[in-house]
Length: 100
Ligand code: NI
Image (cartoon, rainbow, N blue to C red; front, side, top):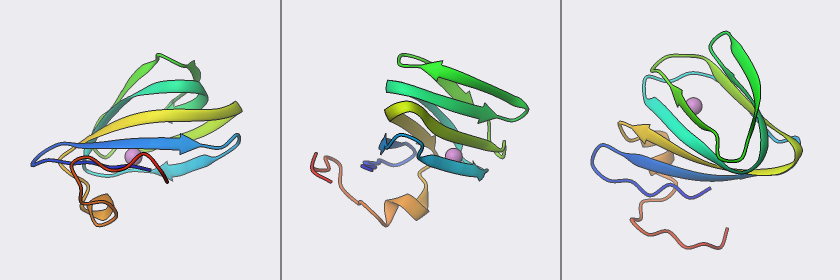
């Protein structure tokens, strides 16, 4: 996961193995994103759908959400505002390296 951030905006590039799960959680940050590769079963609030690469999503603040990579690995670009301070401690760089 790579998470460059500025003053009010954080990106999160997340590579998921097949079957990998981001468990149901919520946070005060607004979150949006795009599925870059693969397929993900995405739950936002009461709605669950399998989405394909190219799908965009918006998760309002404090809304429970969950993601599971299905039918192979997946790559997701998430956007958070404001910056998630819990992730910021992991990678405080404007241009993080590609290698994991
Ligand atoms: Ni989240």
